[in-house]
Image 1: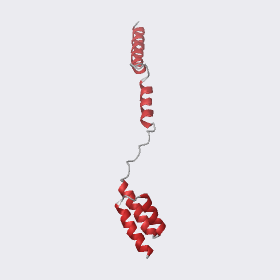
Image 2: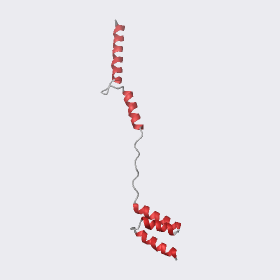
Image 3: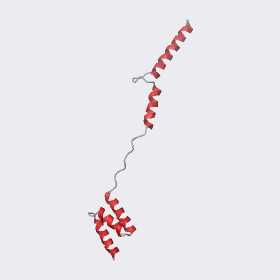
Length: 100
């Protein structure tokens, strides 16, 4: 009788403890929820676009490239693209200097 009570008690404790690990509010085993959380953390994220460059820096770089090339065609192209920019005046002066 003593052994039967001990067996029943151990079996009841085992079922109670196993039940705590198996079912939680979501109805999934604890380990499965942890695995899904780990997978979600490793999921690839959407690529983030870098911030836009300052347009004046891009224009200045293009002007320097046209000057470095040293041809009338490069300076004319720069003037055509950026006729309103203050650097266009410098390009026009450079173009006049090249024409001499």
